[in-house]
Image (cartoon, rainbow, N blue to C red; front, side, top):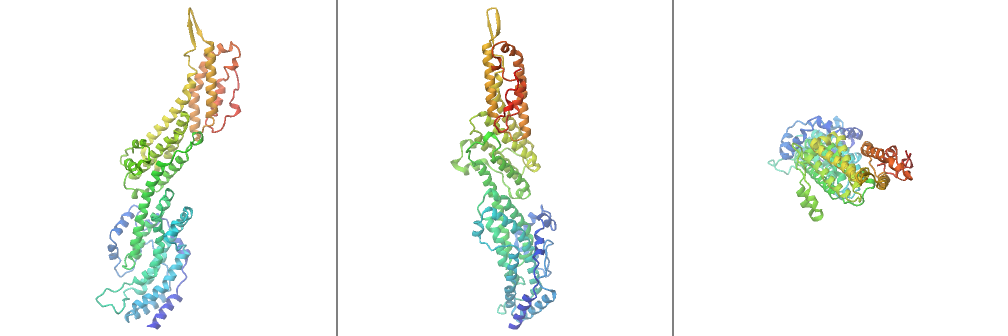
Length: 551
């Protein structure tokens, strides 16, 4: 037996073909969608995977037939020439017949295990403990996740599948249990040497995904964890096909299923953490000029990305957010006004859509707190106008996001934007426009009536001072959207210029007939029109906006 054992070891090691990692790398270039289309649609796959999760034994039963088969996504590669495989089969048959099948299997595992480990190293699979993974900075971890997804596809569909086929061809139907085992006992299967050869590498491979699934949850990790979840979900039918048929190897499949479940829990937990982070983001310092807050950009870009992953997230997010539950979870840290927050009713919408709407609701609430930091009420309204306008346009620019929240909620958002714009104009310009009213200018007494020139001079002076102050201040305010900025200027001009033109037409001769009219009539209508063009640029007013003419 020793001679046969040595010969088996020699053929197995010396005749091994050099595994072409480049060929395996081609497996990793297959997209998840294209892989799934080989066997089932992406919509059907979760149900199939769930069936496998419910009963590993049913999968084992399906694999109990003598004929070897594999999924279409699997690409086996020859690890030894056919004649070498035939020689190994003959040697294994003789050893098994003599009651040394177990010893033959041990030799097989001792030779193939280092080869499997080497293949995974060449694919870039690192030997990292859970602690090693969790101590990595996110940028480094993100890159490793991308590499792991490519490597895992190649490892499962190439390395492990090829190892299992080789083991099948050598040990199929051979009694590889020790001769000391009674005939009544169930013999070890032909998968036993395969399991011993690859189990360590497989546990190492999936250990990385496990470390991610139980790591610290933070919003920036969401989309890479979804990628990891999707990649693992995509691989599960292959993992089942390769491992679940054997009692000694089925634990690898069970582990992969459990890791996918924990990744799903992590996704749900991170989404909840993101919602709470938006809610808790503290109002610190007001952004200059009432421009779009960085939180608004971050949250809406994040929401757009959520919609990019809506296929997976719609499967994983199965419950709607609850404002009351969140308030209870937050305890006393939140201000009482949060109790008024309500989630709008969305008919016939997925729970994921409710979460996106809830994110926007808490973002609006947070922005209202940040708006209160401004001492000038007009700037507070301008800030809300800018930010809600940005939210509306991010929704309109993303068909998926728009489709998620629906037309009704978009109309509500648009209404809030319009209200903020109206409140800005009313707060900022009502006082200025009131200077151009006739009230208080007419005097009457005895048999005559007329205009109080002193009151008129004061009215012009009040208008000039109010407009100059608005021009000086609001030129430094910011409306970053070009179209909105121009529309707001036009709206101001449509109210201001006709009122000033009319006031000037009615009363200018009273001033021009007096002394120093230039002290009171400082601007022509054209001067005001030019000056309005400086508003909302986010910079101090330029010299050209000053008085151009006196007539």
